[in-house]
Each structure stands twice: as structure tokens, then as C-alpha cells.
Image 1 (tube, rainbow, N blue to C red):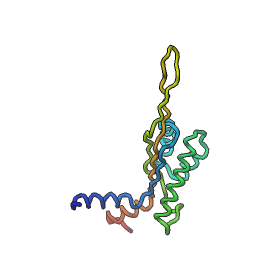
Image 2 (cartoon, rainbow, N blue to C red):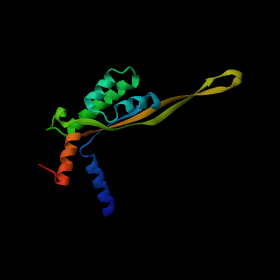
Image 3 (cartoon, one colour):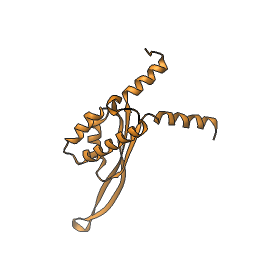
Image 4 (tube, rainbow, N blue to C red):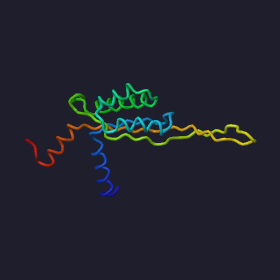
Length: 145
């Protein structure tokens, strides 16, 4: 491995060190329906997002809520000596990608067939802490009190 690739790999590892990532693969709802709930919680604090997802009637909110709880557990595993309440966690990034698609044929009039596409998706959620980021930027800029 060359030095340029090694430096790029170390930079990627450093960028992911403080964030918590959770992924849900092959969720059995369509991406369009899941993106609606993902747009509601993107950029929100964790407690506020959990309340939105808890009281929503959409089916995808249940899956995204479980994923958010998993991301919180992942963050707690990385930062064992810190409290979640003091960290100021927020949803930095959440995106929904299309997954595999089951294709079927349904009979139709005049000897034709209609396609039935059962879609699935992949959800990626990234949590970050506001307080840890503020401390790190103050150390870099030299504005520490």
C-alpha cells in the first residue's frame, strides 16, 4: 500500500471514530415510504426523533425507531465513559437506498401479464455528538477557555 492510500485510509478511520453507524439491510417496505419518515427525523436530536417515530402511524417508523435505538447502543459502546444525556446526540445522516426487488407476473385481460414489483430498501443512520464536536473544534482553533 502506498503512502497516499494509507493516509487516505487513516483519514477515513479518523472521520468515523466519533460517530455511530447503524444499517438496516433488506427492509421489506418500499424506499419511497421509508424516505418520508427519514426526512422527518434527519438532523433532529435523538430524543425528539424517538418521540416522532414513537407516535407516528407509518409502518416504517417502527423499523427506523429500532434502527435509531441500535445506533444509540453502538455510540454507547464506543463512548463507555460518557452519558448519552450529556453528549447531545443528533441524527447526522440518514438515507434510504433501494434494495432488491421481487419481480412477479400477474395475469391481466386479453392474455397479457402485468409486472408486480415488491420493493425493499437499505437504511443507513449515522449519529454524531454536538458536544464532542464543539470540544474538538475549539482545540483545533485554539479558542479554548
